[in-house]
Amino acid sequence: MKDTSKTDTCPTSHTPGQCPLDTVLRLLMGPWTTYVLWLLQTEGPLRFGQLKARMGRISSKVLTDRLRHLEAAQLITRTYAPTIPPAVTYAMAARGAELKDVLDGINQLAVRWQSEDEARALSQAAE
Amino acid sequence: MKDTSKTDTCPTSHTPGQCPLDTVLRLLMGPWTTYVLWLLQTEGPLRFGQLKARMGRISSKVLTDRLRHLEAAQLITRTYAPTIPPAVTYAMAARGAELKDVLDGINQLAVRWQSEDEARALSQAAE
DNA sequence: ACCCTTAGTTACCATAAAGTGCTTACTTCA
DNA sequence: TGAAGTAAGCACTTTATGGTAACTAAGGGT
Image (cartoon, rainbow over all chains, first blue to last red; front, side):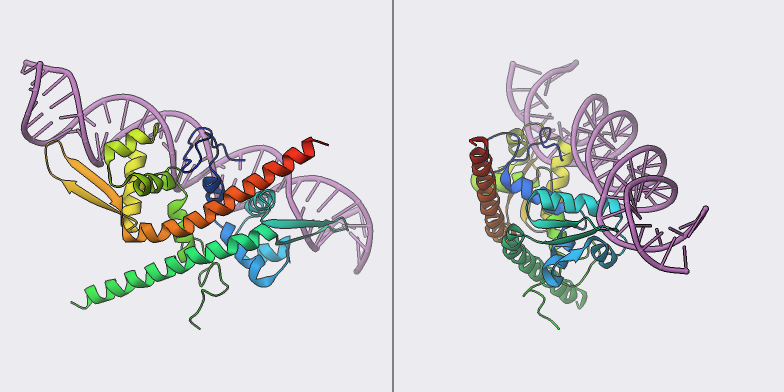
């Protein structure tokens, strides 16, 4: 859990301590987080090891941490099968799907801005 | 092989920092960043000292850093008047206004989720 | 008897980021 | 004379975070 009591950045809510927007942004910001969501959304439910394998150099510790936070925010679901060895499957939850739309919105902006910047850099280099 | 905006949350690159969406999210993650944008959006152009005063306990160093990054991303503009003492004014730029809409989208989700959680907590407490 | 598997946990370390305080430049006002 | 005021810059300290590696559970295979 992150401690937001020291640095409250709340834009919209005047109740000190937690702004909803900030809570969500903080959740998404760490490295790997959006990548987890993207994988679960495009490939469907995945097990811990499958996620880890697709993410290359991520450590178990950090991946666990990201999954726990996403699960606590109800963006993904965690299904534990107490077999030996155990099998744990993660999948997008309803809120994750809702978030996808707005993330796509940001992504479209980001991609467009980047291409605009590249185009401008090229035209300047041509002078 | 061009349209990545349809389903992808992270288009081409898997490494954190290369993906456009990740770049934007990392810029916003703050602390304080969304608060700066919110202030400039709701109160109009503000000078450095005015921003700092409204943000309470932020240090000049961090505020400067945030403003530089937002300026580099062309989300805000910086206007320097070489008077004595100097006067520097920050204002929303075109891209900042574009971003505002999607941020509002996230904020609406976040607020709704929070109220849903609170309602559920209350109904459980009533049992 | 030992090693393999999965999905983590724990301890420890290195680095990055945030916070604090001091300094600058120049003019006006007391 | 010198204090006040603005927008930082710089050096230093402290906290947060990510990464690495070792270790666990419990049974099945060899």
